[in-house]
Image (cartoon, rainbow, N blue to C red; front, side, top):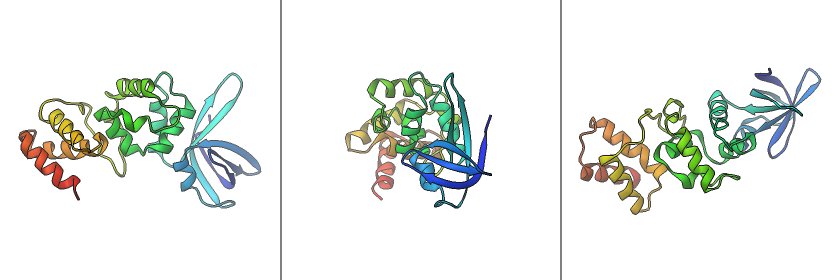
Length: 201
């Protein structure tokens, strides 16, 4: 199994690249996020690789970092999410936003990705909600506990903020941070007031 490639970047396309390792060109499928992180051909490139063996082909999927590779592995555990859909999700939604979207049940964020309709988005939310807390959120997100989906003040605050036009993916990290800072004792009014201060910046 190939886990890492380091060689000259021979060419890039919209969804793949070719890496020349000592005269052998490896075709690597990748997200737009990873492709954007690569140097210009023919400079030296390094990508982490997930090797997928099928009956008719051996396919290589490349990632700029371990975080994106781990998300690819997690997404492809969901029935109906193949490698192409997983790369589409990773191209459209940053890992930190994925963490928040899944934990907060934000279906609209997931359906922005090509190939992800409402039914598949619901399946992703259902199957990964309990697993997302173990995933690093990275820049732009918050690492969430495994019990990220809660009720009570948190639930009511998110509903109220959604009614004011804030997306769940942006409101969720703010609400959970405020609740964590008060050990979960803050009232709904306090959470809303502090959340609006932060979200309005």
